[in-house]
Length: 559
Image 1 (cartoon, helix red, strand yellow):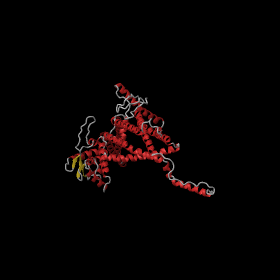
Image 2 (cartoon, one colour):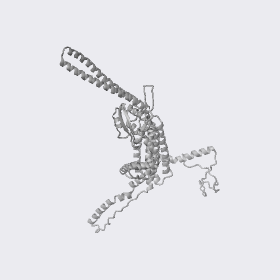
Image 3 (cartoon, one colour):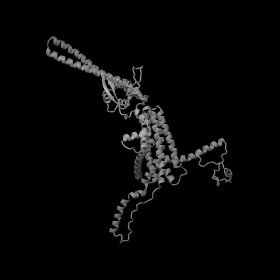
Image 4 (cartoon, helix red, strand yellow):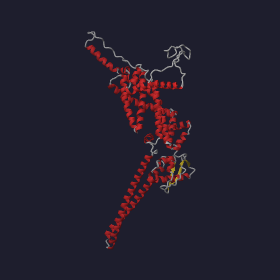
């Protein structure tokens, strides 16, 4: 790698026509570089390559020091040896730019790819079982078969018991005929009671088989529905304390869906007290779609309706009349959330004040948070992958902005941890205790008589300390190195398919690197360095969480 630029020097400055000497690299009159740019394409390409190589020399020296000697670039920079390294600010911008671009690409890969890593990232971020890949579908199918197998075994076991009771009844009937023929009334009564008990048990077995068969049918029929009955009643705007909710909850699961479908059919005919649900969720539409047959299927979807606010509607459930009461409009279903997104700022402020029962402080932040949280709640229902992508991109933007607040705070932590003057002020009361003991010893041993020097009074601030900018340089370097480590370790982890393990290793390696850097830059004993590194790491985690929460909330509210 070339260190010095190969200049094509001229005798006269092209800018001010000042006479130049052969050793002049720049014009003494105007400062323009003594370098002729009138060259062919080949020479131009060579110059570009040489410029890149010369530029990369600093990167080479910086990278070499980073990976071989922790803390060396900070130590050299603070001691004045700066020309060989990339300046700290430039290094941070370059590394952070590459880091956030790489992280963005990782997110895109996670959202668009179909491999196990991508699905793991998406599922861990969303917690959403609706986005199952083919392997998960196979697992669900296997679970379904296993459930069916359990139901089949239960039905078979009950049927076997019923068959045993039928055989026992047949045997008892033969004995009963014999007892009647012999006119043995006592035996006859006993046998009739046994037959009666067995017949009751057979009826019980028949009910159990029926219920088990219905449960098996329910597993076959609605296994793939990922929506609960209470969510459906929320969308129907049924009041939280209404009797209808109690009735639905008391029904077995296999009965809930037919009853809810029947209720929807009744609501669809009532145009006075109900209104059609605009753009119902896919799960809701799937729940109210009839599927019949194993291969072929007949499907229809109801035009789903919900109750209007503050109304009472009579409904028939299995021949029983039930009065269903709607909410007052405060039930936070999809309709409510969509209506909230359409509210003006004044309307939303009034709603927040009403909910908080008083004047709301920081109304613009609460309004933004409420609106954006509602938006993402709906977005997750409609398209989880898209919502996750938006949230992750938002998080990347927040972290990139947050770093400019975090790095000065970390420098302040280092300033407090390594400032001898601050430590002197903290220990000042204890110094006075020590001073009083020395003074007492001086008086008791006759210091005045022996003309010994009087004990010096403790000073509030003692010792040399580093400037704040020195700690800031260390903070910039260590953040740049941390992002660089994350890129390398997680990149390797993705390649080998264990990115989570790679992340853990990266954190452990960085902790060791951080302690070694502190030792090199601040030159304290290993015991003090390890102790301070652990304290600083805990302080950093707390500060990171606080700054991330505050900046994230403000940016989220204002976006």
